[in-house]
Length: 446
Image (cartoon, rainbow, N blue to C red; front, side, top):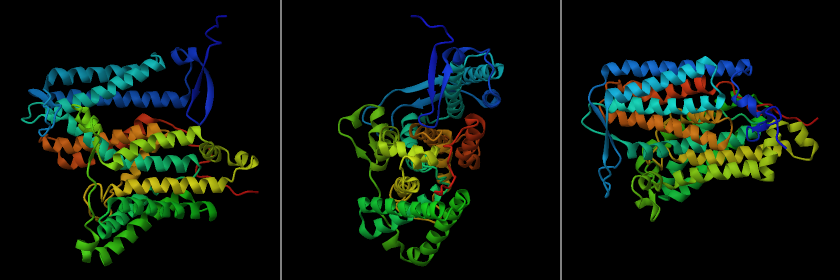
């Protein structure tokens, strides 16, 4: 029997955060009255996209010549062709697409699903237009394969930090101390790696250091009911001060023995690593990059398809209800925070044995907070949080690549670019999001 449009419904679920039943017709009907929050977000996105489009129009004034994009690295055995595009027409098309997308958002007469498509087109247009402007008229081509491979590398600790935040906050514990967990783990990995000259032992020690920091978070947040945001800031300061003090007093005077850890080497997957273009990007990464990808799937599966994951989400949404069915609320929160700390510890190891092999004070430079932003933008979902981490990794790597092209952008701005992109994305694109209902709320059994 056929159904009327009013009877046809679609289940809209935020993967465990909450469920509602929304008529299918409303998803496509532009005449349906939208909420004040939805309207505010739509207008903010529209203004932001339109401003970026106007920014591309401004960049047209300094665009000359053609832009070249190299699909292969200079050392690749198989050299793929270099793509050449005209600078001014390409930037013009990208600017027009952004302006059209911005107008679609601002008009309020475009169905939601088409708005999603318009947003995706605008995002691609921004990247292509900006890179075309940066590469136009330059002697060197923009290295696309380096950009994408570097994105995965830079995003690795961000993905692991975001996964830590997902586990903690899904269980109802706010984790602002990802930065401190990174820092403690990076220091531990550097010292243990230097003493043992073993990458596996350095990774294990980093995971333990992250778990210890997680245990401190759980101890004061759950047992002593300390304000969790303030506690996170204090733990970050503790990690910074403690690692800095030990570094100055013990490690730096003996740098050759205590600050010369081995570096992780890329592991080429036989067969797959030889695939042109994609092989070098996806299948010639370090063990941490592979672990980050695997852990995204594992955390997603555990949270949404195992009894423990159901308990984690239950204590993060309604701890009183979970308690009435026999779930040990604080016990589940302890386990989630410690497991999350171990994952963050692996991310912290990246900054020493995954990049430089040595530790310097405060070397994580705010990456823990970017991981926290990725968590929020990803709406506390492991897959979307990982996607947002890749976005930040892409911007960071792009800033690095642009320095090699001698673009007219000041180097200081290029260093700020990832943080500026973080602020714009969180403030202008995310809109209002709902954290797990009991996130940050201590539970004391009556």
